[in-house]
Structures are given as structure tokens and as C-alpha cells.
Length: 460
Ligand SMILES: [Zn+2]
Image 1 (cartoon, rainbow, N blue to C red):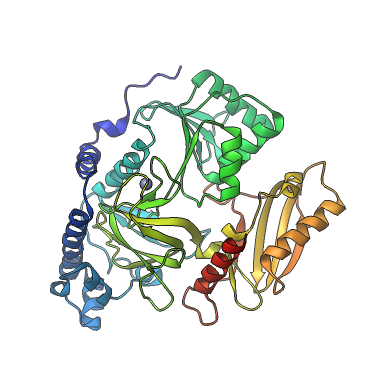
Image 2: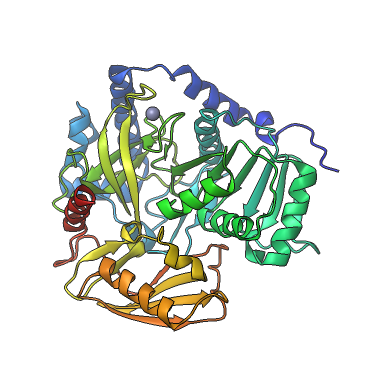
């Protein structure tokens, strides 16, 4: 049944070339990385200046020139690029080239927009992710069970993709009877890995734990496309005791990629892929451990629509330079705080990251699924699908505990619902944020939030 003829990526020469390049740089020291990044910054900025009308106009207006780049710090003279700028005039920020494909980002978060990827960039993206997975023993052709964010219209909502040796299960159908179908497949297929959105893996893991069902041992869980929250990690670890829960940060624009290493759950920013900056509200570099900043990325692999000093609206917490555990001299982030649209805004304008809310609490065992919803500043609705064990007293406790995290400047309503719909990419979102947040809005300070969180952590 599950016959495979070898992994399709191993027949892709762009993939193989990039993978070999990454492997050859595995032992690079700080100086080699800096030299490489400086050369790449010069190259992409020169390319954009010469070939991309939008960038040329932007740089001429700012009075900067590619020749200004002599050190890595010099890139800071170049203006940031906002999503809106590219969205409103994508052709001006793109280069016509054969084989480019139009890509759109998900409409459920932030600002939806489209841009072009050149033929090679996606192969490099796949190879870069694979390169990170190699750290924990993954390789192309390993058996993997994938919860896929695409509807699968076969009778049992699974399909075997032999060219990837992966068994794909629809994440749109994570109902108990359907999860049992997936489990039965797994018993026969014996996957080495599960690949999933954290939200899908979490629902599956919770169901396994609650029903006490056996799942064959796996080496790890590869999480992608969403922030992995601590409460999800904990449930995944409990459900799959010897599996490594591995996560990385990335985005469709392919400007920054950062993954865990062999030993730690910190995000190691891959320096061959792009140049990543964390910037504070004044646009200054974040340098202190524990400080939060917006991720600003310059892609080394995107040429059809280049992204240079691109503001991602995603936030991370800086840890330091270099990981003592694995020895890579990379930029290390302790945590991804999530997309701007994953923050709740309180009545007084504080932003609360979903990572700040503690779901480890046993009280949440009495609900099946939940989702926050915000339409107005300072007001939040907590929608929940109750389990049979849920009652009024439990609901009051949930209300209290959530409020203690959200603060006195939030009005919280609980709303019982029958189910929680998925996004159009098959994700289970924890927050539907209808307010349009901007990181540079006056009176809204994500960075102040970072300070507050750090104090909380210190006091815990
Ligand atoms: Zn490390």
C-alpha cells in the first residue's frame, strides 16, 4: 500500500544544490557568517536598486545607495518596507522572470497580499527547512503522517503521497470518529514523524490522551505555520512521550527562517537564508536578552519580489548571540510572540500576546475547544465548546483566571458555541482579531508588554 519511489525533492537540483551549500557552511564561525551576510546584503540591495523600480524610487527618495553598505550596520540607513507598500503596487516591487509564481498570504491574519516567488526560491525554502530537520534526525523519505491544511476529498479524508512518502490527513476533519480513522492508518503505516500545525497536533494529542488510545511511537513532531504555544507543547509531549517537538518560524515571504536545534527549544535564525533584525518601537535594534522586537527581514533567496528590510508584523523575544548547547553562532530568539493579529488589545491600549495566557491550568480540561474573539478595544469574547464535565462553577473559575491574565482593563464575555470554524487554510485559530493593529500606533506598545512579561516571568 504505502509504496514510495524515493523523495521527490532528492530529484530537484535546486534543492540539492542549496542543501549542499547549507551543509558546507555548518561549521561557519561568526566572522564567516558576517562576511557572507554582508556580501548578500550588498548583492540584494544592488539588485533591487538596479532591477526593481519600486525599490529604486524608495532608495532615491531616502537618499541611500547600495554603495553605502560597507558594514552590516549600514543596512539600517535603508528604509523599512511595509506590507501595504508592496500590496498596493506589487508589480513595481517585482521583476518579471520566467517561472515566477504568484503567491498570496493567508487572509485570516494581518494584511493579505500577493507577490511573486522565483522558480528557485521555493526549492531553497524546502531545503532550508529540511536542513533544520536534519538536526533532529529527519531525512527525506522518512515516513510521515501529515495533518494537512487542505481539504482532502477522498472517502476517509486521507491520501498517500508516494513522492513524499507521506500520509496526508485532512486537518478539516479532526472529529473523534475521523481521528480514529487516522489512528488506524498510523497503526499500519507506522510513521516516523508527524507534521502538523500546532493547533491540529494539539487537538489530536488531546484526543489520544483523553481516550487513552495507543499511537505507535514516533521520533518527533514537526510543527509549522503557526506559533507553537507552551500549552500545546506540553500536551504534545504527554501524548507522544519520546518524540521531540520541533518548531520553526517562517513566513511566505521567505525572508527569515529560524528553527530549534538538536538540544534547545530556542529559535536559531538561519543566516544563509536571510538577514533578520529585531527592532523596537523607535526602529532601534533590540540587543538585550528578554527584550521583544518586531522581526524585520531581508531575504537572500527571493528575487521575483525581493523583500528588503521588510516589516513582518511578527514579534520575537531576543535571547542572545550564539547557542551554548549546539555552538552555532547564530542570532537566538527565546520565543516567538506571534503575529500582531495574535494580540489582544486592552481598554488602556496594552497588547497581550496569546503566549501570555496560561492554558496549562487544569480548569481548561473541561472544555473541548476555545477561541478568543475581539471586535472592540478592551472587549473580548471567549468562545468555548464545553465537555460534559463543564458546569457553571467551572465557567466562573475560567472567567476569573482569564481575567487575572488579561487585566482589569478588559471586559470578558464567555460564549458557549457548538463548534469553532476553521480558517480557510484549515487552522484552528485561538484569536480572531478584528481590530486592525499597527505596531507603530500611538498609545499601543508591544514593547511595553515585553517589559511587563519579563517582570511577570521573574516573579513567577
Ligand atoms: Zn542550539
